[in-house]
Length: 72
Image (tube, rainbow, N blue to C red; front, side, top):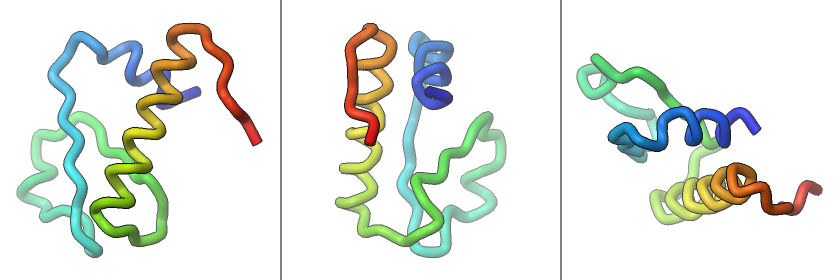
């Protein structure tokens, strides 16, 4: 629910999601960034990270739209 609130509150802003490498992002990239997001403490391939992000965005927009979503 926290992520859906973030998306709802920042929907009209320019959002950019950057997938880092196994050691994260260089500090120079993080300078001036307002928010950071960790998908997990585990390391994923870029393809898997994108899939997880898209799934979380889908859930966030479903919550914003008042639709039911699966909660295991």
